[in-house]
Length: 390
Ligand SMILES: *[C@@H]1O[C@H](CO)[C@@H](O)[C@H](O)[C@H]1NC(C)=O
Ligand SMILES: *[C@@H]1O[C@H](CO)[C@@H](O)[C@H](O)[C@H]1NC(C)=O
Image (cartoon, rainbow, N blue to C red; front, side, top):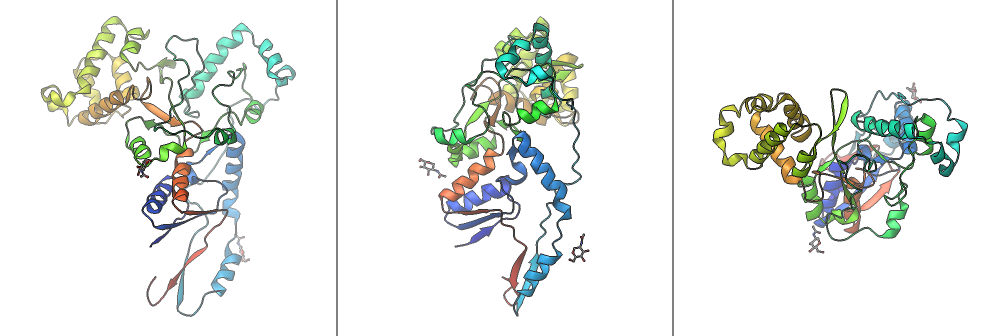
């Protein structure tokens, strides 16, 4: 039996804890914080604000006094390894507010029935724009699925359990955010800071914003380990990209490509031909071998894709940089295409209540197999036996 103990547990530590526990080792998981998932956690808006406060204050904690206490408890033949209580991976936190900090107007603070009357036609237009912008500036990772006006947008997709079992109703109700069955949120013309505070429980913010490829290694691990049973997942409804200061949908399927308003007929054919080639590019080495060590971007030019299409493929489909080499770019494009359709019309999955669910689910698996969890407990030092070094 081997004990595993982890400092500042995040995703990696949670996966290790689950794996150790699963094979019968004893695991003690200590976390000085009040929440799981460490720097991978997801918060409501208010939760995020308290997290920011905590980190702003962490440097001010003076550990000298407590250090004197535990040092005095050491016995003959023991050595100590002090552990820092400061998480040095996060520093220089500053808060900027881009939303209006004005007070809301009187009528906007009314209950939603009154509020929806106040929303005029022009407001509706403006609000769609506001939503799209929120996606492209990177601050909101959860791509909205409720717009409905645009013919590119899909109806809200069914939630996906990526394995067979699903979370119990009781657990779902513990989550602070609204369920997708709730009526769409009324979007007001101007989103003020006050609005964000008030509606702060209706969305989650991930400290680490990532999406999972539906045929990626993490999804495979979640299924293989049965950890997927502890969470619910959603497929991203659609992908938008910002080009020439305009927000445009990225065509993900054959139907999308042909329905696209951004592409000309010639471009549509060109793109379909190129994507079809990418699906099994390894079978056609003569097409790319001479370029495999050169930038993908140049390869796209050589393939005579229009600039429009080069941008689409590079930034929105392969999602690589200007310097990425051709073979890597082709693989990335292929991966994107292979992920399509597994759970929906885009290649990306996300946990319904934020990425913080993932480490938490691994913790749960660890606990199911006997791991012990203590939040709000920090470790100040490790005691080492001088003679054996253990
Ligand atoms: C921490 O406490 C010690 C003794 O209590 C004191 O000498 C030291 O100046 C303090 N440091 C800070 C940064 O407050
Ligand atoms: C996952 O669940 C299946 C069926 O309940 C079980 O046979 C398998 O051993 C489980 N895998 C792990 C890693 O726990």
